[in-house]
Length: 444
Image (cartoon, rainbow, N blue to C red; front, side):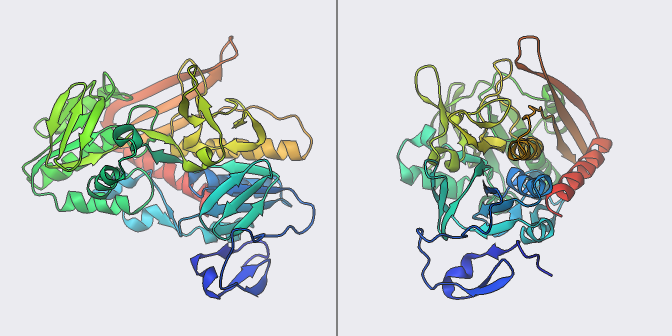
């Protein structure tokens, strides 16, 4: 049975099909206008609109409904189903199958009573407290932006769209849920030999999928199938980090003839047509590549005009936000959750841009919005982070890293990092327990 306040407006809504609205069947218009009021309000309950149905957005939707049972919670997401970046490296070598990563988003919407709309977000008008979408206009009292990252190909190519498309089509980064993951898996399965170059995004960047883990598992496939291939990791950092000792041991002990790690290899230029790349550590040719450009906050944050500025007035690429309460500095009714978040503390910079942190922050923001709705004091909370990385395919052995946070005497957030560098099957078992708990939180 479909709950009264839970429904999906899908891509077919513009074709005259019927769609659910509050339990009533309505004929959808044959032509949808971005000026149409998509969901007129019913009653005076607070309305929270969430842009982005990934780890953070789905978590926020579920927990807002629990924290504020009468709230009108609307989740806007362009993709027809959920695809998890965490665990996607394991999927590359078939440790998990596609059904493990992909999930129906309508089921949790039905279970928890929020509204799910499949649409493109075209504009965010904060002065009007409206979100314009391909299906119409939605107004809000509170807005949560949880759009993840965007690939900053412009850092390499400027406005050269031909080079950007050549790179995206032939050497996809597979960092954002899309067909690029399938393209990367097909690339690996069809690889016959040669040199694969992997460029690593400079920090801060999304992880998972960890690029070092990806290199290890691709190397395991090459080694297991006796493919005459090598992987060249071009790392902009001066050393492997985090879990430096664990990854170095994996490179040296498991894949010494396959993986070469090149530090201080910040990209200067890329030629995707002639398969060459110039870095501060030298120039390299390649037979194939996984070209992972720098990351930035999602397009949603740019559209909302909430990107921060550095001391020189240049865009930081990340959200300008309160580091303790997670709302925009210029708009307390707009919250940023997950990978788009800006810097948190001068002691360490950004929180890890991970699914774990997105889930944790989404729950904190849900509680904070509920406190505001009830007229209570808003309590600042800190997350933690936990990530497991598989480095060997047989036996399945993983390493891990944990981040803990507290507030120092200077009033700033401090970070404690705990690396587990010794690879063991137990850590892989823990990884499956961890992700089951996560999926049970926001996908069930």
